[in-house]
Amino acid sequence: MTVLTRRQFGSLALVSATQARSLFGARDAAPATLDQTLRDSMTRRKIPCVVAMVATPDKVTYTAAFGKRDSKSGVDVKPDSIFAIASMTKAITTTAAMQLVEQGKVKLHEPVSKYLPQLAKLDVITGFDSGGKPVLKPATKPVTLHHLLTHTSGFAYDTWDESMLKYNNLHGGPAAGVVAPVTPLIFEPGTRWQYGTSVDWAGKLVEAVSGLTLEQYFQKNILQPLGMKDTTFIFPADKFDRLVSSSRRQADGLLKEDARAMPVPPKEYNGGGGLFSTAPDYVLFMQMILRHGKGTNGAQILQPKTVAMMTTNQIGDVSAGKLKTFRPTISSDVDFHTGATDGFTYGFLINKTAYNGGRSAGSLAWAGVENTFYWIDPKRSLCAVVMMQFFPFVDKEGVGLLSDFEKAVYASVS
Image (tube, rainbow, N blue to C red; front, side, top):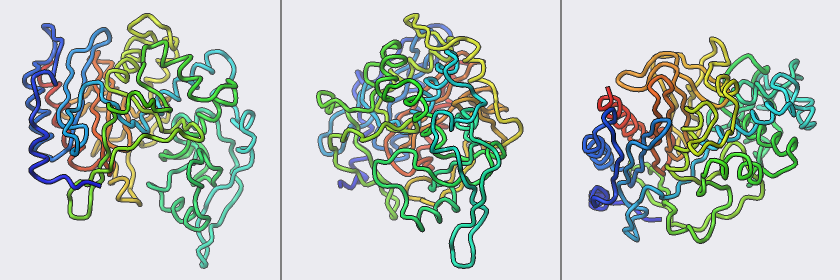
């Protein structure tokens, strides 16, 4: 591991003119303003690197890359640098599942145990006895695809749920590389929102129904049709020079960089995370959503009525997007929209009220655990992605940069 010193962080701000480029029309943001905001925020917050893009449904309007791929080599990060996008995978898995719904191969409100029999009999954790053992009762409702795609199934990641952390500590947790282990639920399906392995299971459902691995399904039905040539679960050796290093916040507040290493191919494909991608690739996916299911190249990925469901709150008055951390080295407390009650669609967090100085009400968003973020604003016909690569998730400096950039984007297009 390499400790990034203050001097090294300062050097990350030095960027050549070729590292930031833009394609702006009369209604688009001023590139110099966005460059300055992004570069200054990265330097002030001592973030190793950032790649950001803004686009309309039809064109990219801003692209920038600042900082270094890794501190040891001093190689500049570039717009097509490759990041581990973690849970930004979930929206793509949701798209795959919704394609199967369109084809009549699966229904949103039928029990998923029809395809995943291991989910037929699930228990709910109701508490722990005096000896620390979990108290379980059979779930009275079946888990459906609707529950999985909206995170209302009751499945939980232990990073953000104390009961699941206690349960995993008692039972040893899932083995390394195991995707979507069968665990108790933390509530009856459909009664609450909680971030967890729901979309991991949706990925298993896609594999079971389609007969393809998730990598095969994604490439055939989403990634290749959209031209997302750098997005994959299996990192190609010939692109290793484009992989951005990851860093971790230490107790002293500094970031410590992990040595770059060739990613090992996964034993299983995870619908909840695991893709590698680039900002340009993810913009193509977001533009497809803005274009009601059709890619910029004309590829029809989803039907407009399906995208309408994916851009509409599906959980009523239940609050989404707020999480207390129980693994602070992995994630800080999560509150995407302080003081507001956000909802969740099939695949996305949706804000019911506008962000102060930022995205409109009805915008869609999610993120990856190493501080990769995106939002889609249908009302303003724009989308944006901001990619960094460090832990913990929603680190105050990473969220601060995201906010700085978002406000600059809207200030410059208003």
